[in-house]
Image 1: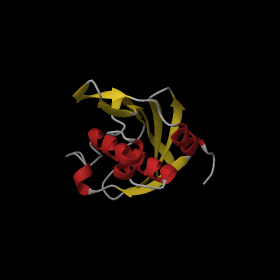
Image 2 (image 1 turned 30 degrees about the vertical axis):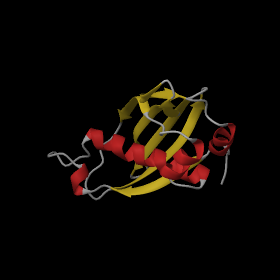
Image 3 (image 1 turned 120 degrees about the vertical axis):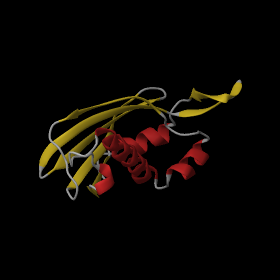
Length: 142
């Protein structure tokens, strides 16, 4: 699978009073990493590919993480992100965050390829992921 790698410097605002990254901020970092993964795969920003494929986006329906070691203000971390599996409309995204050469956080997201429900425009409805999107996210090298 295609893996997107990002280098991120931990900012003061990412941290809690103990001086370590406040855990919800990891999920913000991972959400951004997912956007970068799709941009790498599809060659365009989220707004553009959502328009192209006629969807609202890929909302998260489940998430989780294992925190192995802390990250602090000023640390430069590496985030690796890849789609680990596909369903008809489901994407399983995995993230690994490294700090100081060691694995610090391992996380997962379950997302759904979603558009507006034609029967109720106030709701979202899952849609089949286009084959070209699956192919773009499934390549092993870029």
